[in-house]
Length: 116
Image (spheres, rainbow, N blue to C red):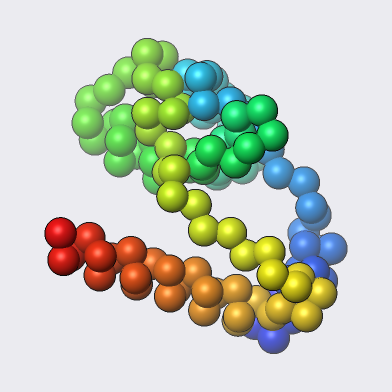
């Protein structure tokens, strides 16, 4: 993969599939799913609506470091809800343009949090 590659060509090579979980499932079930599927994150969907993303980072920071139980905590309590997606014109958009969109959104979010 090169930064100038079209997002569509990257997904054609990597695959279009994603593994998901419902927000009312336990964190333990999410970690089991990630281990079984060999992935580091799951898309969290409520019905057909994107609710967030649950990742190994979420698990480490919001379960392990806070001393919570993965068998008791729900994915909805731990997931990252503010998800940035890059869908615009995937045929022509490059990896670089996708990274730029996400970086800009993260910078705006960090600046807003700093001002609070």
